[in-house]
Image 1 (cartoon, helix red, strand yellow):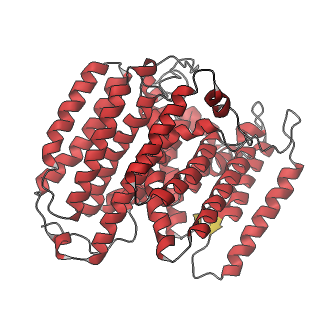
Image 2 (tube, helix red, strand yellow):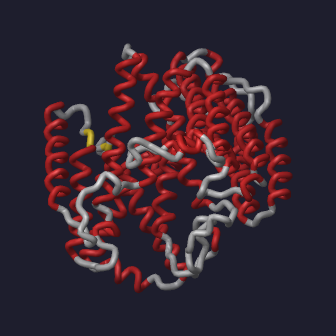
Image 3 (cartoon, one colour):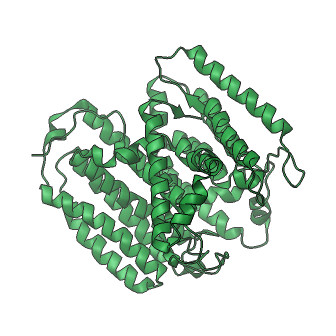
Length: 478
């Protein structure tokens, strides 16, 4: 019999899912763009050989789903994070201001990071000063956002943070870009700005609907009505496309709640499961499903996601829908009659995964087929279902088979996603450029196969660097 854990400090499978998303995001940004790799290696709407954005081109590639997976993981983390504050006795007003503070700092991170991106510093010239400044940006962000291990005195943490903010203000106040511009609130990382909005609105929504899933889901219906109405003239359109603070908030960003709110429901299920394991009751160690069933479940989750990627990118929509329905229906039998807490968790996650997937497939022909930009309704729901299936896969590996070692690299990166997001562009790449290694490595990896291998190696280096920070308990936190 596979040994079940008696207590869980972190949702390791959720960390692994977040780590998987962030590393795939890194890989998608560094694979060769020389027209030699197939279209499914890039965003569906920016295919080779020219990589020109085509808003009318439907499809779904692995690159298109990494951001939704990360967003889903963020939503699932909200109940876990805020419930800890509630258990500590925090009042709602205190939690509300904590949410705003967290969002403010994440927004600052998005703005500061973009000012230190190498292609923003200088997009035309390869100068040592450009890479030195990008590298300097990494260390400034390190000082600003690093949280030292608890055994360090609190004043040291505060001193480092104040030093980082002071240096950041000094450097950015003197920095001038090639076009003559200086620091600007409008210059920000759009992915992080979207995450900032989701962190704030998703957390507030969960806080006031934590005991009412129907109300939380009902908000998606209102959001859907606003999105549809915003396409026609009227007050909704005027409201939707205007913002008092466009550099940090736009109503259009709220569409990503279609992924985040389902993520919070998955987070509620995980939170309940963790609490039940903490009680260490007899039911938590009673097994009903055989080991072979868990192996088939893991394989099925991976198969469904691969079928969706291959079928929707190939535009075999009807065939993909029929195969997905058959696979999901067959899988339904595997999740029946759960006998313990982990089996019950998987059963409920799978039910929600099927619901969001079927809903997304029903919307697929709408809006000209699934697209990432501008994101279609089918995109939100299909990628949500795929995220849940990956979460089930990682849960089986981590918490049933107790093989956390297989996921350790993903878990470390999932615990430290802010560093993982920055470390290649602002640490490794500047170092490679300044030492001359980058050109030498590129020269030795000219073929498509070697170029792709180079991308994987770079991503693996990122993963190991971030894991070192995580093992040292050096986390970037907002």
